[in-house]
Image 1 (tube, rainbow over the protein chains, first blue to last red):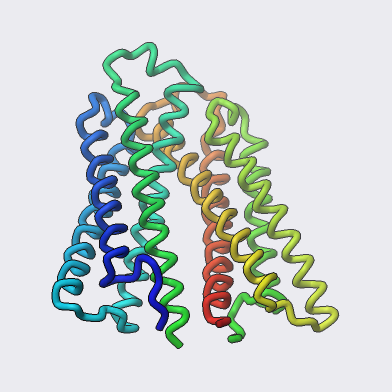
Image 2: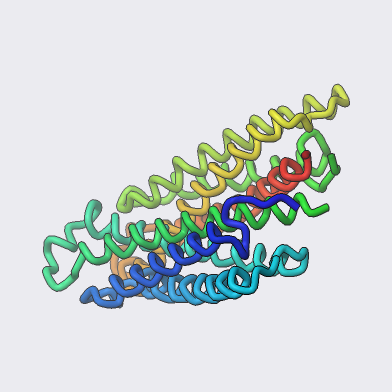
Length: 155
Length: 155
């Protein structure tokens, strides 16, 4: 089995997972602290999806730290399959959440003037949260591709 | 190289491409025929993205027909790389478009009563178009995974 950048149980893998956790957590924080986020279901779904991603990435970061400390290899086919499925499901949910929030955000800012009219909505915070969610999804997508590639080249 | 369901140049691949083209085209048709779709940028982006996907799938369906008629193999690494990159870019754009439209749609139907208040908006047609877009994206995702899997198991 090849050793790729971002493989589980390597320092690069740990770096990716930490980045995913950090950006997903920051996205949840930014959205939850913005006044009026509950106006749209898409924003609530973003919090749920980014919360799930943060938990998933934190769990895998702990697994990476464990493997690095004990110098154990994690690349067994069964574990890789589990990680690949989990990564893909999480990344599809995250992209869906980030995109739907972005669609609503563009409706608020460009198509209607809701953000200008309703000063109680913190549209800047919505935007920051969505941008962080896209960065987090991008890092997760890299992990997903690496996982898939390793799994496909096992046999 | 393994022969998988949905490989390029096989009947199952042609079936997948035809399905993608059909659903993407139907999604464009449903959205473009719905009155008031230009109220949201996300709906316009759905038309653009599904249009691109329909063209891409039609092109690859023609390639599959050509390969099936002449009984030629299409699984060269260079062609597979091109198809895999194209498939992935298209499927990420499609999922983004379908999700952002779904986010706006939920805002219209659940969060606000815009669909009930504004009878000029054909919300049912929006919903049908978004559902067709998700089906088309799902078929494209299958093709993308098959392409990626074949590419990873080449070497």
